[in-house]
Length: 192
Image (cartoon, rainbow, N blue to C red; front, side):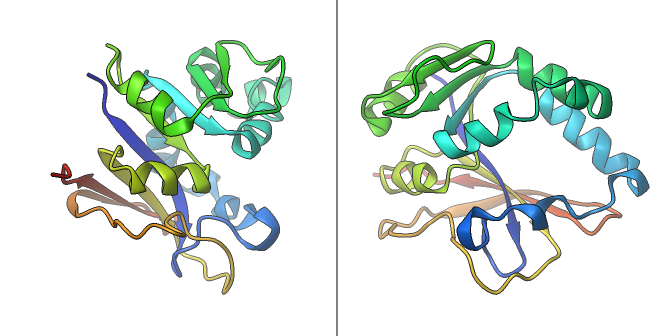
C-alpha cells in the first residue's frame, strides 16, 4: 500500500495561492544564496514515487520542467520532474504532452484510493488545492509537508477550503533554511 503526501508552499498567512492563482510569492527567495535549500529541492525531486497534479498545476509545471531553460537552470530538478511518473486529474485534457504522464478523468477520490492500494514508492500531490481539500475530506492524505515562505499576501486560497472533517496532524519534522523558508512536516492520524 502506498502513502499519499501533500507537498505545498504556503505564505505566513496560510495561503497556497494568491488571488487569481498568483504564485510569484513562492519563488521570490534567492536560491543563489542558500545552497542547503537548493540541495533540499534537488533531493526531493529525485525521491521517486508518483506525482499527482490537478490541471492548473500540471499546466504550470509542464510549461517549465521539460524545457531547455529548466534543464540548464535546474538540471537535477528537471531530470527528476521529467523522469517521475505523473498522474494529472482533468476532465478536458487530451494528450498530456509530457513524458511519463497519464490523464485520469474519473472520480479523484476513487482513483486515489485505487492508487494507494497499488504497490509503489508513494504518491505526492503537488499544488492542486481543490484536490487537497477533497482528499483531506475523504481522509486519504497520510502526510503533509508545507514550505512556509516568509511573505504575507493578505488574500488568496487555503488548501483546506470547504473541509469540515479536518485531519488531526502530528508534527514529524521541522527544517529551517537561510533564505527564510521553513519546512514543516506532519503525519495525519488515520480516521476511524
